[in-house]
Length: 279
Ligand code: ADP
Image 1 (cartoon, helix red, strand yellow):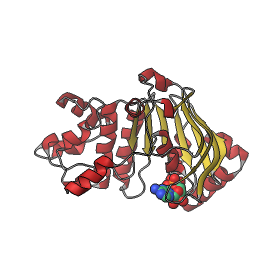
Image 2 (image 1 turned 90 degrees about the vertical axis):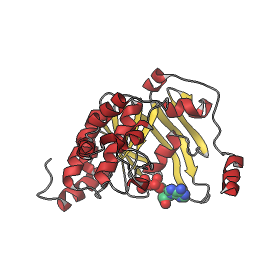
Image 3 (image 1 turned 90 degrees about the horizontal axis):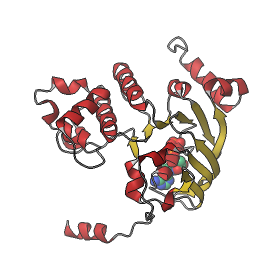
């Protein structure tokens, strides 16, 4: 154990933060990918992004769609600086995010991903861990849980003191997802990144999750990796990732009108879901 601990403590991070400290209103600006080229360090020969350009407007919902493996999640990893582009820049408000202090950058962003990590602690703590200061009151936890539609917590005898169990073993996929949304809500982030839940939640949970997300999205800059076209259709702007770049950008109506790649995806989706989709 000590050996592993020392290795971790001695590891030199490849991503180093800058010096610039910024406040909340900094994130009111646009997020821009400028000629970004990127390959994962473990596969240096395989470029995932080849000169990608994209502007994400503030206070709007941008859906990113594309085939599996196209590079959608990679974009979110670059915004949070889990990785840096090999070439090009990621800018917020016109500033290269490499100039920002990492805590400053991370304070403005919350991520809800497909497989939320729950810690072996109470449900309340699991929500509270999202708070920027690391401090939270019972009242804040309750408010965030309400916004995220976590009414299932009230059905447990111990309420928010209920133990989540290792990795949230005692909870369903939909419940874990809503806890993750509450964790993002308590952070009150300027920028919200959602890697949309896939079909591993039942339909009833799905509508509860959608409702929770609508509450959280209001007024924020949101980037949704949309696995379902129903979500993309509701976004303000849709960006289609293909061939290591953005091939189409526009509203649902504009992209249908354009009759390109997105329109093709949409047609396939409609024919596969005939009778079940309300358009
Ligand atoms: P999407 O979100 O569109 O499904 P990703 O951004 O997850 O696609 O992945 C884009 C490409 O990068 C895929 O070919 C995937 O296999 C590869 N990839 C993703 N994560 C890693 C990683 N950590 N190391 C190496 N390759 C990766």
